[in-house]
Image (cartoon, rainbow, N blue to C red; front, side):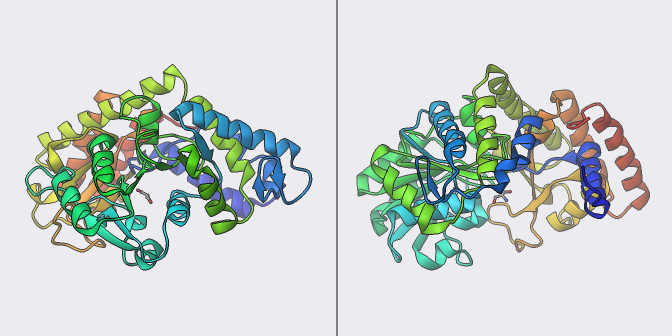
Length: 409
Ligand code: DSN
């Protein structure tokens, strides 16, 4: 197929890494072969600015079928009135949603980055925080859960045009209903960023914000297990504004090969098998959190309702940072990321916590017994993070474990 060994040898090594080490990054997953095939298809060759049946270039009749199929499937999956499947990423989907309903300088409520929110929810270093007047809410000190009282008080004080819910590092269910009520009480629009939990919603294990929120954005590659990309669902009355914001507002030619892969993923996510997968993600996350708690780690908010947990390392070892832990675990074949925890005294580059997710290992077929094993491996590494010989031993044990659960045999 190719004589470009220089590049494809590198890809072979990445395949080997994914097959032989533990992937515990909460936002990652293993897409199916059908998703990979669509992503690697000839649709990458086609320019199709515009939308189905209204394109700027010729030759798009077949592309139109692909994009129509993706839009129809995702609307059916989530019960949406309108879908835009063109956003290249979750960040682009969020920015397009803002562009659709806000003017520069408008006030928006979003979750604080260091309490679980996302960069695009108003961080000062992101365009969202530069172009719009974001005011941040967070979690309570007492139970580390979304502080709805604070959200309501800030909404009354600042009268935002938009309230953004959703998170990138928050382990609990986010119920859209009370946030809708707060938005209504101040006349705000309500956007739900479901990037992390789209697969849990599709699988019926988390409440569906579609129909409750005015706009729902999400990524297709996390719990939803599709190709890397984003999407927007909205009420019919916002369809035209959302479409105009994505193109020509923000993006150029859509990635129709990725849209084809999104269509594949939406079909996969509509099956009973996927619902069982989504439930197992949460079962596994709870088992892993319980195993880690048993090893002496404090789990932020006391547990998890979704695909991830935040681990406070200080109860295990007051000196251990997320940075050191991430690097030590990486050397041992356990891939995850350092993360700030609510009220973290350390910076985002150092942190006192880890974020650990179960979507990928669940796709690989692991269940509660493997979660207990992984908890023991993590604790063993972190008891002696500088021990190179121990890292090599654990790396071998991880390899044996992964050989029984290989995502791409
Ligand atoms: N990088 C994604 C995550 O890990 O949550 C969000 O942008």
